[in-house]
Length: 511
Ligand code: GLC
Image 1 (cartoon, rainbow, N blue to C red):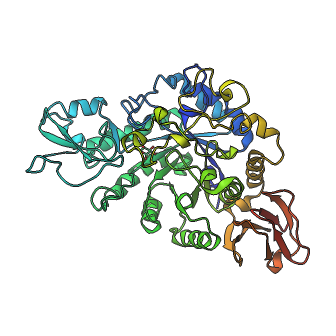
Image 2: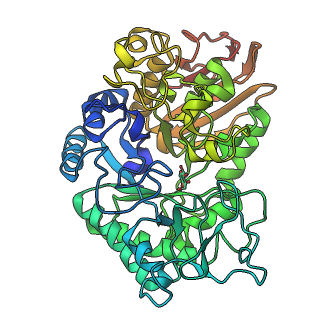
Image 3: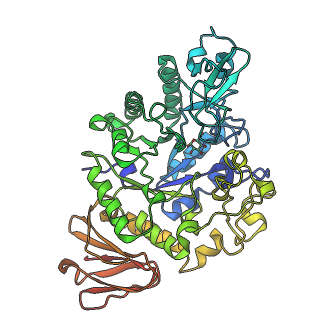
């Protein structure tokens, strides 16, 4: 098999408001991302995925879009995007955009037309229903941000559906005109040279069982259409453009998104490590089940966090955040890193007066806000951590004078240095990206597996606990040597066993 870039590569997610500000408004921008491309290239990632940068009233920070084919002035202009693309490509970095097909802003011209009258040609571009006989919402569907998913429209006497905020009206994907318009959006960006999309598909609402509002059978035909568009851009239909689906579903249903004969998205995001209990045996089972559930030719992928979920270092602590890094970068499949995780950034406490996320504002007290995981990237020890000359839109991590890129790049044992080493190893040893995967026998807190490609066999051994462990190595690995440890220089016991210290992860090679 000739591996494609999105199979061997590592994706790095950028939350653009928080990466790098260059125009002094306290909000990151496209020129800021461009300024930091050298950092990203030297870190060793292969692609960046940028959360939405389109014109938006920012009710949901860019996930409420008024123009799919433009750039919000807070982030720059289309010309800045084109520059960024050229500069990224010049460094061998691919650029993925967020495609938000589920809903538009309620200020999008399509919705403005749709709500203007019941017989407007765009009425059916959105989901309008009569209210219940008692005047209430048409049914019990709850929005992802709390409250009914239906909003009453006085002027036309009907309700429209919104899976998220009422400022985010859901498009009616059963309408072919909507499909055509949105496929044109994909072509617009593919024509400009973007390398792929991450596409949010549906949210996870827990208060009612979602039998009729998400994961509908027709969605697979839409995914196949999108896939065909993406594949039409690759050399000889080979498909070097990638589609990644944001799909929060149990593994069996998630697998359907690869599509019949892989006609669906290339990578349905696998969020299991985000939610998993951090316990060696259950992680081993989770990995084995996921590997076993993959359809033939379906390429795996792994994620530790994103702009919607608590950060990995907040959940697992600093020592285990290093183990998590080794796990993410040594499992079979495409890893996606979340900006700042390479610094061990944790969730930043946001004083109530500074809360910005609509989810946090609408359901206060439930700790649902996502601001803590969207704080500015700390670059150096200068004012505002080098992120901006102005007060950043969200507070910095309190420990930024120490926990910043410039400082940690100098420290031989920082998590940043570990990430760099792991990314370099992954690049140098194909076994780590595309090699076969097999679990190894291990007990207690140890998770161990083999990666194998050609003549090379690697052992990855991770101690998920705070006590040392002795791991008996299989015969074939008895004379292997350590490549890297999460703690310090790794040592072998010398008698066919590996002594893992507390919170230590090690990669060994037979070569
Ligand atoms: C996607 C995004 C999330 C956003 C939601 C609604 O799930 O990841 O941040 O709030 O869509 O637009």
